[in-house]
Image 1 (cartoon, rainbow, N blue to C red):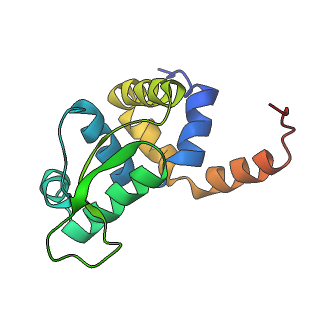
Image 2 (cartoon, rainbow, N blue to C red; image 1 turned 90 degrees about the vertical axis):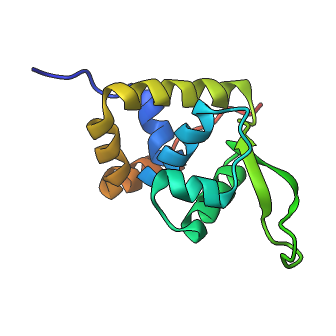
Image 3 (tube, helix red, strand yellow; image 1 turned 120 degrees about the horizontal axis):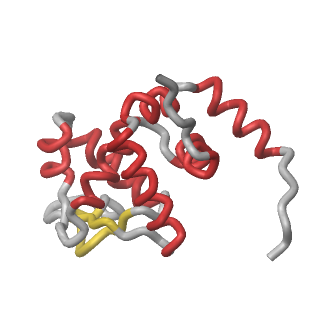
Length: 138
């Protein structure tokens, strides 16, 4: 039985904005609990990974505009250290809708989405094609 292909907008989003399966899993975990303030320790336990890896994922989610830092750095942390808590906070309604679409797609086609994330050839080809795409001025 043939499965429908991943919609082009979600395919492009995965290829340009989702660097790894752990990143996606962290994003979807935060999305599933939008009111929850997450520490790297909490996320590490839920994703069965190291706290350092979880902290990196949370920081990357913030840089991507998908999460936000809350509060002050942990006590005793150096200046510039990451905040101790994070929450789901897409930077725009359009990004929130794209993430919602991806969450639905991932729930129904986990293997296809995972394969797409792992397909570095597709990712490199998409980035190359995007470099030549004409963009309209705002």
